[in-house]
Amino acid sequence: MKNSKRQSVITIGIGLIVVGVIILIFALFQPKVLVPQPSTSVSQNTSETKSEQASGLTVTYPLNLNTCTYEELMSVKGIGEERAKLILQYRDYLGGYTNVEQLKDIEGIGDETYESISVYFTL
Image (cartoon, rainbow, N blue to C red; front, side, top):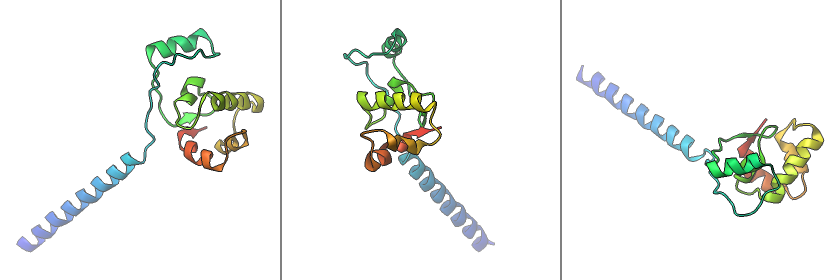
């Protein structure tokens, strides 16, 4: 009886360790949520943009490419002002993205850049 109880305790302990490792791995590989600081540069967007910046912008990833804003795009590491504008212009041109890989069609976004930013987007 003592032997089977010991085996049960060991099995439960190993199971808890495995679950802990899985949770740790999952947490480490999630994209970080960035909250951009209000910038001093003037954006070409509406006054709505200014009020969002003044109140602070909270971004949840992954971003939907067909609904995300300029500010949300700017929060992604690897996307600056120019790329954010191009992503939005291309979305308007297409009438909406049908695949995240369409980002590769934008000038300045090659395979390497795509690999680093694609985890932040969905449709």
